[in-house]
Amino acid sequence: MKPDLSFVVGDLCYADSSGGTGVGGPDTQDFRTWDRWLRQIESSASRVPWMTTVGNHEMETGNGELGYAGYLDRFRNPRNGVKGAPVTYSFVYGNVAFIALDGNDASFEIARNEGYLGADQDAWLERRLRRLRKRDDIDFIVVGFHNCMYCTNLVHASDGGNRTRWEPLFDRYSVDLVVNGHNHCYERTHPLRAGDPVVEARRGAVVDSRQGTTYLTAGGAGQAVYPTSGSPLSYVTMDGGIRVPETTLWSAVTDNQHSIGFVDVVPRRPGRPARMKLTALATDGTVIDRVTLTRG
Image (cartoon, rainbow, N blue to C red; front, side, top):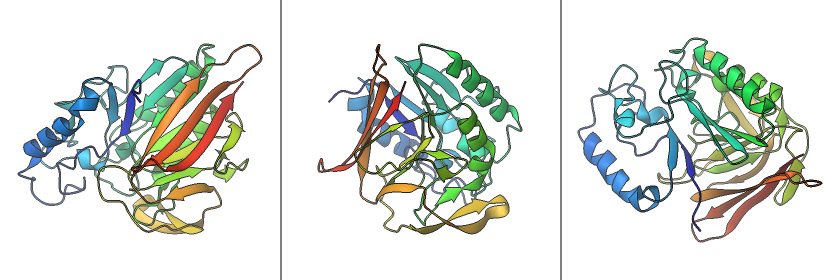
């Protein structure tokens, strides 16, 4: 199977041992860790574009004010994002629009880069969503960033900063799929509006994505997986790092093994809606999850 592109939402190689907090000295293995990881992905990245953005581990100690210098030395993104944030961008492939955001700017959990863009990222995001949703050649909008808006895994669970700032925009402009990482597991929500499930989407479901946004945690690769899950009760991190318990009726499928997600998209045709089929596989090829989003 040769994909057309890979969409990777941060924590690429863990060259910084401080976890993006800025606490502790520089990791003397930074350059060697980056080089080793790039060699590992070369067989794929030399043939398939890797479209990436930053996670908390790209906030590297000693690599510039934001910590992103190591990442930016190695990746050249489309230059159409937020002014002062070259880790943000958007692009269109076929009938799918992709938007990459800097989740660190909105995160309540890890405060190092919180709010560095002020209102600029949100304003750019709204302009981009409005413009893309008006285009007749685009069926689906996919947004990717690192921190999880909806996840039951107890290590990081959900981030209220990203929810507070971006969920109203995702609802307003009917974003189809939001891809996050951070928690080292796989999880998918039912389609949501204002945080509530609007339709049930169990394994194998076919759902109209105009009804609500599906949130996907695709963090089950590379690093060690996180074995714990908070469903049906987890928490969301709010302003000041306060963990607030919450029920998780929005969670549809969870899996804590190493995994990878594949997305196959078919444009709409006369009398047939566009289809986005998501398949999650374990490393042995076992199917973890399947769901199909449609859009008329």
